[in-house]
Length: 303
Image (cartoon, rainbow, N blue to C red; front, top):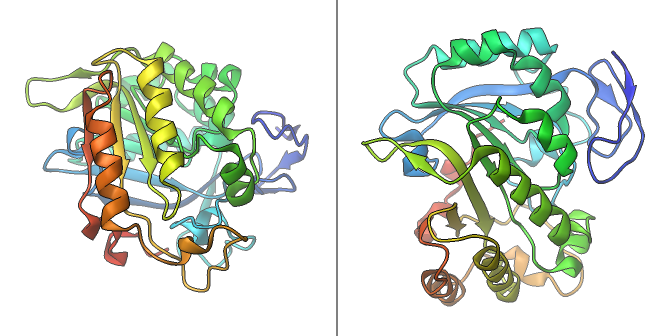
């Protein structure tokens, strides 16, 4: 049913009707599904040897200027995406069950921040019972706690980004200067719903929170600030922290002043310092780092 949306912190009040809307995210009341595909490069505790069956959604309430999935999440026109479909909550529930009926280790919903209302309606008790494997909610972290609450009992693993501790960078790169405080509140809500990380005997995650952070070129203090914040928010073993080096400059990217380094990769020195800082964070005892080779374009789905 069409509605005026204030689900995310932008509070734009735009009418969401049918497949598209006039709000910041550009999304309507139906869930835009760009692709369902196996992803073998999630954190090892998620996919194991079989990977995660990921459902990539369209639109975004951040639209970071460096987004690797800009074709489906940042573009004003997504009509050219092969196989694009718009699903009602009932239809999306069927998509979730179909994804779960593969041999993947888990099912992932990717970029779900602006579809929380619809996803919550999709995961009925019958759908949740039929999935029979971890359901992952992968998101940008720019969410209201009261909206995240709608996912209580419906998601097993929350995987929010914590992109920025620096409000200036958040404003310049994602038009969300309030991101640091918003993301902290959202992450704490995810932790309230999922609880401390739980793993099975094979080391695969059953429930909990994985917080991801992408190191940005020339913004090392932003990364150190994120690590400081999380180290102060949680106790050892509470969450998994994933420190990513996979930043990939987009062709033709013209960054705002003071962000010129975004046209190149993360340096070895930047990522080395970030890793060392993470390793010395006493309360972040579970986590992952990446090789700098992870910025290879072949790892990015071609939409």
